[in-house]
Length: 173
Image (cartoon, rainbow, N blue to C red; front, side, top):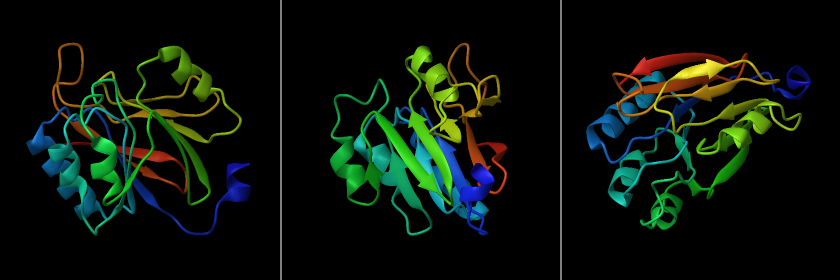
């Protein structure tokens, strides 16, 4: 069980997605994560250009990122790997005993399958630009939202996940 695997510590994990080269949003997110004292930030894809990825280079937190459906033409891997870890199209990360599956969310059937996985404790995803936590599967699926688009949120959001209980705080940025 999750409780049996957890160490007696607590981590705060920052989650962001779909920044789409909005440097102001990315900068505010880094400031928000730094002020909140998060230990790790995970970008769920669609940074777009290396110049945006570089904004996440800081000593304040460790950084992980995956590729989104709009990230194909830029050499994000080499930029991110210079200061963090780029995982390609999917990541499985274990942080403080919590097994996270990270996907952009382009394929809803894949997100649904991950939400029912016994090999994970939580799924992090993006793509829809709508923040929220879906608890309809076996495990929670957390979407931090993204920059505003029609049909999405009116403002950009990030999520901060507490590994002690998988509680989530959503913050606008």
